[in-house]
Image (tube, rainbow, N blue to C red; front, side, top):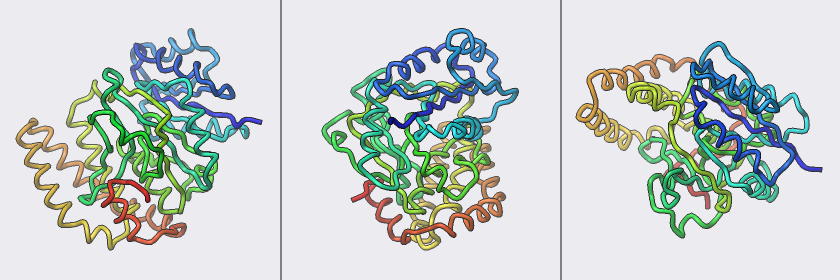
Length: 329
């Protein structure tokens, strides 16, 4: 008996690109599936478009913008009610997956134990010779990084392997991990959007689960289709704020201390770059994000204590992964 896949789509003003995303899911070789979509109070008629053209989709109409984190959580909670669902495929509205994407990821999952998340090779939608994401990792300067971003698609991407983390633009997360991880909800809703996938990936590592890159599973990603309507100050604010939470929740103190010099140098260089290339408002929002993140320290430390009760890995394991750009050997 096959294991059902729940495809999870969070939509905000994406009416013009939804059909192609959904059709790529409908064309999957893997047939035991359902599609769940939440419309985050779009103003462009996205919800009506789905209801009219894809009545089989399990649609939630929200009267507010829940962001990426809560939007996904609401859909996952709904899909968890179906006991046959064993995998949750998170597909951004601006992502498209090849017909064997699901099949390839699930076949890889079946080879291992304690699998949390899997992603394939995600390529640029407009230029398939360019990589969008191979995997994600936390670098030695404590910055979250997409490995391979904007690099040429080459031989180095042809081998499947275990990695530090996965990009939520197109990923599969197992039901077993969702039910095993220590929080009531998968994504941290205090993040709203940005870095939630890094947070989940690091959580998986902390509790002894594994994330995988699967070379043969191909997806295509436009990139920030919803957030392009927002200003750069919006994304910088949430990234700056959420990075503080990401580190305080997941990273051992000894590693934070070890990485501190590199982090401070990078922080200075990043501030100079933003100041030189963006408006004063954007600079202010970046600094504000850092300050708000620090003010939320009690919230993050509470969640850290919850995670530590389940932590199974040694601190140096994180440093090894950070130094190797997220490759697990």
